[in-house]
Length: 346
Ligand code: ASP
Image (cartoon, rainbow, N blue to C red; front, side):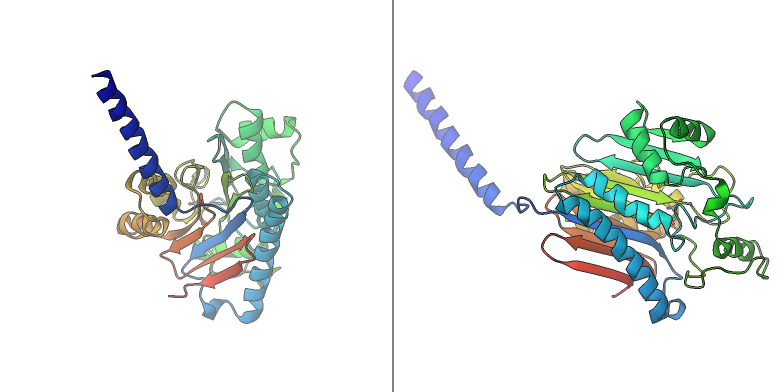
């Protein structure tokens, strides 16, 4: 009897080992030491060739390239994905071209209130800030919440006080002002006259959205994601969108992927968009491209939402999708691929 049991056990082990080898053969693998970064600079229906001549496209593309290079540089040196996305997002926040940091949109009362979040896919540690307007780089504030507090999200004055204490660079709220965004608010509020001269004519006029985000995978295979925004132009005072909400606008998990979203935040919150995509990959084995399509076109769009998402999976593959006319986006990989796109190419 003992012998029979022993033979059975050995047989079982051999079968299991074989089947494991077979599964592994089929499973895609990440090249050891490979790395990649993908970024977005917002999605919208105003992002069409009629609104962006070659010269304007070049201005946007150059800035997106600068952000990709900043993140790539960190990864190339063997740095962490969380540091890479932070560096990339900082470049975009410092540029008035995008709706994050300097150049953030105005709320209905003529103020700028910024949100940001960051997530580490290895530990699931996360940090977020909402409704701030004195920290120069909101993504650094999100990182600080993650690294230096025991909380995940801080908002408004409390967040700013803590950030100042922790030594982050603080600025007067006038630092974030751009006349282009201010004129945009006045237009949205029905005032057709330009109240201030536009300082940067290269900025897309009808850029209602323009949030920025980044996802990276480092040489160790760790994924991180982050998002930063001024929210939606003419939003109500105190309104918070999806960008600082972990699972809605940002999500990273080494066992699936990292995601950053952009679009009408209310719908991304209601569908818990980024986490939903990750869940489809994890539990239903859905291909990342199909998962993005399912959430954007079958969940967000029917509710009336629009926008896009960038995704980097655990093998270092980049995917994106959007239901708007355009989305500023790009990626750079250790394989040498470097792509930047603006319009819908389908
Ligand atoms: N999702 C952002 C928000 O709702 C806006 C955007 O992505 O443009 O605050």
